[in-house]
Image (cartoon, rainbow, N blue to C red; front, side, top):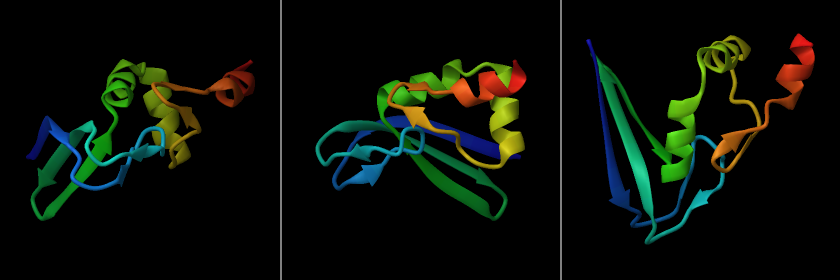
Length: 89
């Protein structure tokens, strides 16, 4: 069984946002996401607005993201999915 936890914390050092790849600066608030599934566990860090954007992704974008096996190019707080849209057109 996988367990997930999300909490907002104040950065004690610099981190990098998983969504936009920009820095999370020391002293700023960010969302810390932790997960565990048996022996596998980890942490993800997001700017608050980036975490909100992740939650707004529709199912098609999530499927494309997972199928590509990588994180597409993002801007802070949203996605640039022009290439994806052009592929489908």
